[in-house]
Image 1: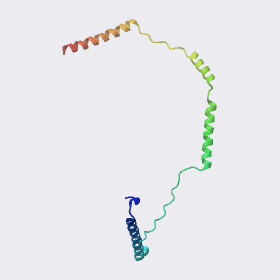
Image 2: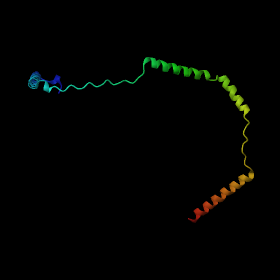
Image 3: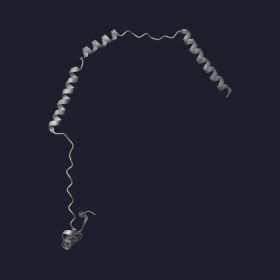
Image 4: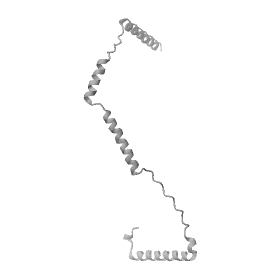
Length: 126
């Protein structure tokens, strides 16, 4: 139930209960004294944060920039690439295409026809 929907009488009763709870808490503390207090927990050691110092990050960044500069300097310009490709194409002799003789084609065709004829004959028996 929301506190907005409570009547004034209910609010007064709730305030009285809270006062009683506070009073009982103080009585318990007086009876038990320091015994009721929870034992202090040992402080947890601070968790070491992984990471790198600013100087270490600067060194890594400088090394990476140097690597990229080296890679970019080694790149070939597009015009030079075209010249290299043309040189490679001219330098390689064209491969000779394999052509099958008419006799070889006929032999393969006859073998395929014989396999199909045997398969069809086997199906007709069923």
